[in-house]
Image (tube, rainbow, N blue to C red; front, side):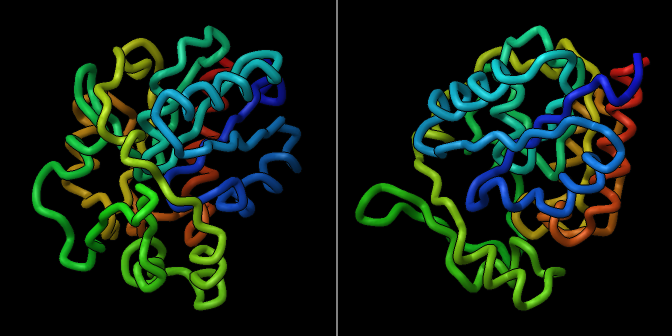
Length: 230
Protein backbone atom coordinates (compact mmCIF):
# COMPACT_ATOMS: atom_id res chain seq x y z
CA UNK A 1 0.00 0.00 0.00
CA UNK A 2 1.18 3.52 -0.77
CA UNK A 3 1.39 6.11 2.04
CA UNK A 4 -0.96 8.19 -0.11
CA UNK A 5 -3.66 5.61 0.58
CA UNK A 6 -3.44 6.27 4.33
CA UNK A 7 -5.61 8.99 5.84
CA UNK A 8 -4.44 11.19 8.69
CA UNK A 9 -7.07 12.39 11.15
CA UNK A 10 -5.84 15.15 13.45
CA UNK A 11 -7.58 15.70 16.79
CA UNK A 12 -7.06 18.88 18.82
CA UNK A 13 -6.94 19.05 22.59
CA UNK A 14 -8.42 21.35 25.20
CA UNK A 15 -8.25 25.12 24.66
CA UNK A 16 -7.66 24.60 20.94
CA UNK A 17 -9.53 23.98 17.71
CA UNK A 18 -8.70 22.58 14.29
CA UNK A 19 -6.68 25.67 13.38
CA UNK A 20 -3.96 24.42 15.72
CA UNK A 21 -3.01 21.99 12.91
CA UNK A 22 -2.61 24.72 10.27
CA UNK A 23 1.15 24.09 9.95
CA UNK A 24 0.67 20.32 9.69
CA UNK A 25 -2.13 20.02 7.14
CA UNK A 26 -0.56 21.76 4.09
CA UNK A 27 2.75 19.82 4.06
CA UNK A 28 1.01 16.45 4.38
CA UNK A 29 -1.56 17.38 1.76
CA UNK A 30 1.23 18.49 -0.59
CA UNK A 31 2.71 15.00 -0.25
CA UNK A 32 -0.59 13.45 -1.36
CA UNK A 33 -1.80 12.39 2.09
CA UNK A 34 -5.50 12.90 2.78
CA UNK A 35 -5.88 14.90 6.00
CA UNK A 36 -8.94 15.75 8.10
CA UNK A 37 -9.07 17.70 11.38
CA UNK A 38 -11.78 16.37 13.68
CA UNK A 39 -13.69 19.06 15.62
CA UNK A 40 -14.27 18.22 19.28
CA UNK A 41 -17.02 20.07 21.17
CA UNK A 42 -15.17 19.55 24.49
CA UNK A 43 -18.55 19.29 26.23
CA UNK A 44 -18.13 15.75 27.61
CA UNK A 45 -15.88 12.78 26.98
CA UNK A 46 -18.71 10.85 25.29
CA UNK A 47 -19.56 13.87 23.10
CA UNK A 48 -15.93 14.13 22.01
CA UNK A 49 -15.64 10.43 21.20
CA UNK A 50 -18.89 10.66 19.21
CA UNK A 51 -17.55 13.65 17.28
CA UNK A 52 -14.42 11.69 16.40
CA UNK A 53 -16.51 8.70 15.32
CA UNK A 54 -18.57 10.96 13.05
CA UNK A 55 -15.37 12.22 11.43
CA UNK A 56 -14.07 8.69 10.94
CA UNK A 57 -17.33 7.72 9.24
CA UNK A 58 -16.50 10.27 6.53
CA UNK A 59 -13.09 8.73 5.86
CA UNK A 60 -12.57 5.79 3.54
CA UNK A 61 -9.50 3.63 3.96
CA UNK A 62 -6.89 3.11 6.67
CA UNK A 63 -6.37 5.88 9.23
CA UNK A 64 -3.54 7.18 11.38
CA UNK A 65 -5.08 9.04 14.32
CA UNK A 66 -3.07 11.92 15.76
CA UNK A 67 -4.06 13.41 19.11
CA UNK A 68 -2.68 16.41 20.97
CA UNK A 69 -2.89 16.69 24.78
CA UNK A 70 -6.43 15.81 26.00
CA UNK A 71 -7.22 14.26 22.60
CA UNK A 72 -4.90 11.37 23.44
CA UNK A 73 -7.68 9.98 25.60
CA UNK A 74 -10.27 10.56 22.87
CA UNK A 75 -8.38 8.84 20.05
CA UNK A 76 -7.88 5.76 22.24
CA UNK A 77 -11.63 5.43 22.87
CA UNK A 78 -12.63 4.73 19.26
CA UNK A 79 -13.22 1.17 18.12
CA UNK A 80 -13.18 1.98 14.40
CA UNK A 81 -11.39 -0.82 12.57
CA UNK A 82 -10.00 1.64 9.99
CA UNK A 83 -7.60 3.02 12.61
CA UNK A 84 -4.22 1.36 12.05
CA UNK A 85 -1.94 3.51 14.23
CA UNK A 86 -2.08 6.17 16.93
CA UNK A 87 0.22 9.16 17.33
CA UNK A 88 0.41 11.04 20.61
CA UNK A 89 1.69 14.61 20.51
CA UNK A 90 2.47 15.63 24.11
CA UNK A 91 -0.77 13.79 24.82
CA UNK A 92 -2.59 12.18 27.71
CA UNK A 93 -3.01 8.41 27.77
CA UNK A 94 -5.16 7.22 30.67
CA UNK A 95 -5.46 3.47 31.08
CA UNK A 96 -8.73 1.59 31.46
CA UNK A 97 -10.64 2.88 34.49
CA UNK A 98 -8.52 6.01 34.87
CA UNK A 99 -9.79 9.50 34.17
CA UNK A 100 -8.04 12.18 32.16
CA UNK A 101 -7.71 14.20 35.37
CA UNK A 102 -6.03 11.24 37.10
CA UNK A 103 -3.20 11.17 34.59
CA UNK A 104 -3.05 14.95 33.99
CA UNK A 105 -2.44 15.60 37.68
CA UNK A 106 -0.03 12.70 38.15
CA UNK A 107 3.18 13.93 39.81
CA UNK A 108 4.29 17.47 40.48
CA UNK A 109 3.02 20.18 38.10
CA UNK A 110 5.39 22.52 36.32
CA UNK A 111 5.84 25.76 38.29
CA UNK A 112 4.56 27.72 35.26
CA UNK A 113 1.44 25.57 34.87
CA UNK A 114 -1.78 27.58 35.31
CA UNK A 115 -4.28 26.91 38.06
CA UNK A 116 -7.53 25.73 36.50
CA UNK A 117 -11.11 25.92 37.71
CA UNK A 118 -14.56 26.07 36.07
CA UNK A 119 -16.26 29.43 35.52
CA UNK A 120 -19.87 30.24 36.47
CA UNK A 121 -21.06 28.18 33.48
CA UNK A 122 -19.04 25.14 34.48
CA UNK A 123 -16.46 25.58 31.70
CA UNK A 124 -12.71 25.65 32.14
CA UNK A 125 -10.94 28.40 30.20
CA UNK A 126 -7.18 28.80 30.03
CA UNK A 127 -6.13 32.25 31.28
CA UNK A 128 -4.89 34.38 28.39
CA UNK A 129 -1.46 34.80 29.96
CA UNK A 130 -1.06 31.01 30.16
CA UNK A 131 -0.73 30.73 26.38
CA UNK A 132 2.61 32.52 26.59
CA UNK A 133 3.72 31.05 29.91
CA UNK A 134 2.75 27.40 29.52
CA UNK A 135 0.63 26.43 26.50
CA UNK A 136 2.88 27.72 23.71
CA UNK A 137 5.79 29.67 25.21
CA UNK A 138 7.90 29.12 22.08
CA UNK A 139 5.27 30.68 19.82
CA UNK A 140 5.47 34.23 18.54
CA UNK A 141 3.49 36.92 20.31
CA UNK A 142 0.94 37.11 17.47
CA UNK A 143 0.47 33.34 17.52
CA UNK A 144 -0.12 33.40 21.27
CA UNK A 145 -2.74 36.12 20.83
CA UNK A 146 -4.55 34.03 18.22
CA UNK A 147 -4.38 30.87 20.32
CA UNK A 148 -5.92 32.70 23.26
CA UNK A 149 -8.61 34.30 21.10
CA UNK A 150 -9.78 31.06 19.45
CA UNK A 151 -9.51 28.82 22.49
CA UNK A 152 -12.34 26.36 23.06
CA UNK A 153 -13.09 25.78 26.76
CA UNK A 154 -13.33 22.27 28.17
CA UNK A 155 -16.00 20.86 30.46
CA UNK A 156 -15.08 18.90 33.60
CA UNK A 157 -17.29 16.16 32.11
CA UNK A 158 -14.46 15.51 29.64
CA UNK A 159 -11.86 14.74 32.26
CA UNK A 160 -13.67 13.14 35.21
CA UNK A 161 -15.11 9.94 33.70
CA UNK A 162 -13.19 6.63 33.62
CA UNK A 163 -12.08 5.69 30.12
CA UNK A 164 -12.70 2.30 28.48
CA UNK A 165 -9.98 -0.11 27.38
CA UNK A 166 -7.73 2.14 25.28
CA UNK A 167 -6.98 1.35 21.67
CA UNK A 168 -3.26 1.82 22.28
CA UNK A 169 -3.27 -1.66 23.80
CA UNK A 170 -4.17 -3.06 20.37
CA UNK A 171 -2.54 -0.77 17.79
CA UNK A 172 1.00 0.45 17.01
CA UNK A 173 1.55 3.72 18.82
CA UNK A 174 3.97 6.63 18.53
CA UNK A 175 4.58 9.28 21.18
CA UNK A 176 6.26 12.67 20.80
CA UNK A 177 7.53 13.65 24.25
CA UNK A 178 7.75 17.42 24.57
CA UNK A 179 10.71 17.89 26.89
CA UNK A 180 9.95 21.58 27.54
CA UNK A 181 6.24 21.03 28.23
CA UNK A 182 4.85 23.20 31.03
CA UNK A 183 1.32 21.79 30.88
CA UNK A 184 2.02 18.02 30.95
CA UNK A 185 5.51 17.59 32.36
CA UNK A 186 7.96 15.48 30.38
CA UNK A 187 8.35 12.88 33.16
CA UNK A 188 4.62 12.23 32.99
CA UNK A 189 4.77 11.89 29.22
CA UNK A 190 7.66 9.43 29.50
CA UNK A 191 5.67 7.37 32.01
CA UNK A 192 2.70 7.17 29.68
CA UNK A 193 4.81 6.38 26.62
CA UNK A 194 6.64 3.59 28.43
CA UNK A 195 3.41 2.15 29.81
CA UNK A 196 1.94 2.14 26.32
CA UNK A 197 4.99 0.55 24.76
CA UNK A 198 5.00 3.41 22.26
CA UNK A 199 7.73 4.19 19.77
CA UNK A 200 8.92 7.34 21.48
CA UNK A 201 10.61 10.40 20.01
CA UNK A 202 12.00 13.09 22.32
CA UNK A 203 12.17 16.74 21.30
CA UNK A 204 13.11 19.93 23.13
CA UNK A 205 9.75 21.52 22.33
CA UNK A 206 6.87 23.07 24.28
CA UNK A 207 3.34 21.79 24.86
CA UNK A 208 2.07 22.80 21.41
CA UNK A 209 4.68 21.62 18.88
CA UNK A 210 2.12 21.55 16.09
CA UNK A 211 2.36 25.33 16.23
CA UNK A 212 5.89 25.90 17.49
CA UNK A 213 7.83 22.91 16.06
CA UNK A 214 5.80 21.51 13.17
CA UNK A 215 8.77 19.67 11.62
CA UNK A 216 9.00 17.40 14.66
CA UNK A 217 5.29 16.62 14.45
CA UNK A 218 5.43 16.01 10.71
CA UNK A 219 8.35 13.61 11.12
CA UNK A 220 6.56 11.38 13.62
CA UNK A 221 3.29 11.45 11.67
CA UNK A 222 5.11 10.47 8.48
CA UNK A 223 6.77 7.62 10.36
CA UNK A 224 3.40 6.28 11.48
CA UNK A 225 1.89 6.71 8.02
CA UNK A 226 4.75 4.76 6.43
CA UNK A 227 4.32 1.96 8.97
CA UNK A 228 0.56 1.84 8.40
CA UNK A 229 1.14 1.61 4.66
CA UNK A 230 3.71 -1.19 4.95
